[in-house]
Amino acid sequence: MMNRSKIVAIITGAISVLLAIAYLLLVQILDYRDMKPAPISQFEVPAIAADSWHIDHIA
Image 1 (cartoon, helix red, strand yellow):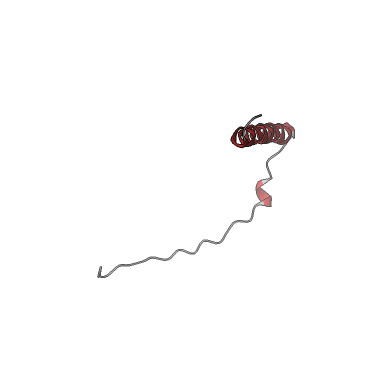
Image 2 (tube, helix red, strand yellow):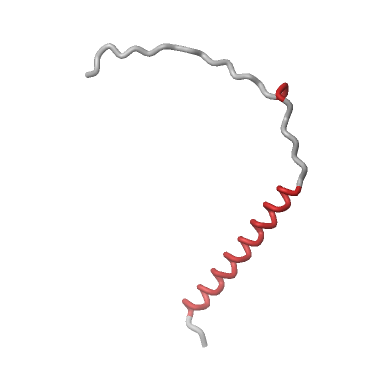
């Protein structure tokens, strides 16, 4: 009979392998989609407020 730590290690390893396979499948599915970049007109141009900072004294 295997002791508890070996069983936990095997279960943890199996979960890790399953998560890795699921991640690879998800990446393949997302990469398979034909994604086109959004047109430039779709982006909002943020307003940039320019301000100058002056440091007169350094305490």
